[in-house]
Length: 205
Image (cartoon, rainbow, N blue to C red; front, side):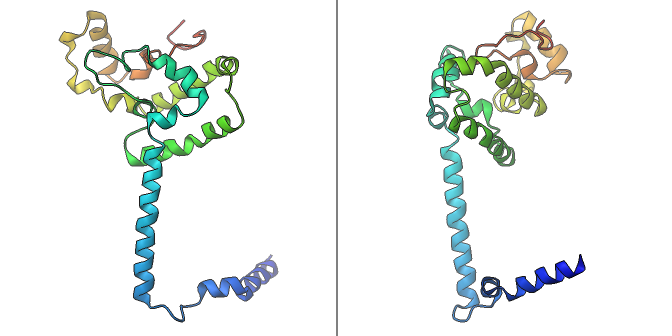
């Protein structure tokens, strides 16, 4: 094993490209390289954040047929889309955390969704309906795991006025939400999209 490591190290040190990459610059000053690295970093960071925000819009989310024809159409008929206050929740408001670190983690998870789009996992209504419960359960589990973080970006239990809620909602919030026994998604699964077959879903029997 030691001989193998020695041979690999020898090849690494003798490789022309490795030597070039590790050699000090012959013509460029350290100040120039430092400044160039800084400028390149700023450009990269700006491009990265621009791309991140461009993919975090309702227009981007609904640019594929699967989303526009299915879940977005359903959203249009809910209070999150049209209401008396005129405040509308968009796709990323409910499905992408606002904090940068959590947002990046969510975007990494979304790469699987891009893969599904490329290979047509739900490119027809029939395919979407067949997978609807699986997709919904996966999203419910994600939101339960983060304590309904996206819901709480707009709905704060600290600012809830129970006197303005109907008695049933006020009682449920006081008993379950304020005590931490349940989180938003436990009770509000059908708030923005139609529910799938709920048989076997805890609390919905």
